[in-house]
Length: 279
Image (cartoon, rainbow, N blue to C red; front, side, top):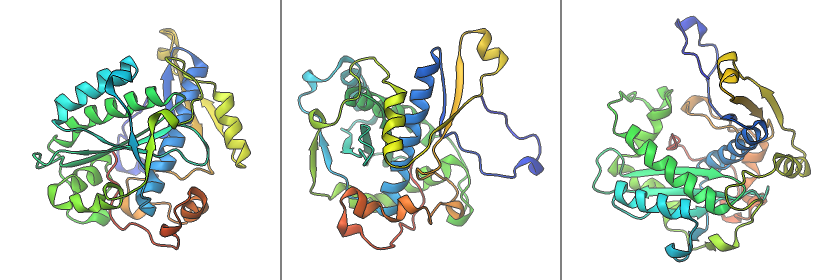
């Protein structure tokens, strides 16, 4: 649903895909778009404020849902290591899982991160594993990363730069944390294959004084084959930016995150100077 600029003069803003979703069911598309806004709020907040999230214990693999179990097996075959998972559920109470993938044998993707939100923690686990498996391939694509971090613009710039083995220590605030959580204790908004009720998510946002706006951006071509495309905006959530000099560092939700989310040790105005490793 995107159009590449035809000339440099068209580049008057920094494009980002946050809040875009396509599905055969309109409400499901809205739900997925809402959850992506929630997910990226935490992607930005965790990295910029260096929050030591609780490490997530998923329990016995045999007790995972089918999708999560299959994705975990595929992840292990692809990365040749186990993922390190964290409970990144925010004050909104929408299940969110953050992943740090370590592959010391790789010169390009020694460390990767992923994040996903959704109605069912089991489905969220499957989603974050699936996405990291896919984007690991992108980290091995030949891509010219700018020499200066301040010139980072592309979605792959920070991910490839941070993925190099010599920068593995930058993830220590997560990997050395002592907090623990269990997958079985995470909130459940819907079980199984159900996408969940977007009204419930909107209600959680309203409880925090936030407004969600959904726009139907379905093209004629997509509509003809039964798809719905939507774009959701939640201005009060922290936006995700891949531009090092275009981060939203003054966002109120970012600044009060340590106190609001229960990380007093991160209080203050300290911001992670390193580029966003998510892609």
